[in-house]
Image (cartoon, rainbow, N blue to C red; front, top):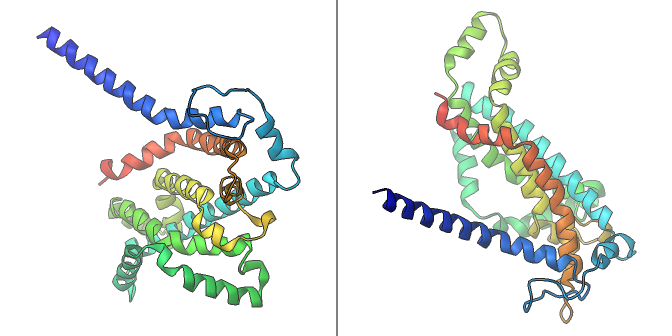
Length: 284
């Protein structure tokens, strides 16, 4: 019996190690490629033919590659989108879950119905709208990072509202009622009861919104044409989007640098993320 259990443990460990290696191998290839000055992906060896920091140096010394501007744009858009989507989503979810008003059910169904359709179906309509906005106020129009920010906000509200509403529905109504009996108003219930209890879920939504916006490519590549206004995902694409030449070295180096802040944010918020993912299963 013990021999059989030992064999099972061996297979489990072997499978786990295989999955880890399978997952980590692409990351390893990107790291190796970032230090390879030839600009290509080595397929014959797991180590670069030459070891150099030329790809990293190019990102910060070549005037044709405004890498810091791309990183700044990505952080501005991602941070603004995460903060705004959490703030508006929390307020909307509280209203849909706790308040009773005309059009509540219709609004919830409309939010759910909008999420059914893929976002790329509206690209042409959004493009025309932002083109008209540019004629009125170029700051929020086509080609600006703030115009892209408005698009991201509109696309993320539906999912965030539904996620937060599902969590808020699991909070006992007795908490609201006891607060009302003590003289608390609706805004006070929102600030003093809902927000503290929903902090883990809000952290999850904020982190996911930040990472998703930071890595988003399709909308950013369509709306940001100026080199200085591009995000890091769009800017790095120029290294591997050529018709005849692909320089994977700088692309890999830029990807490694851009991933460091995301890893730090994810690890620093890990406690809240775990609590937010399990909150719905333990409440109610």
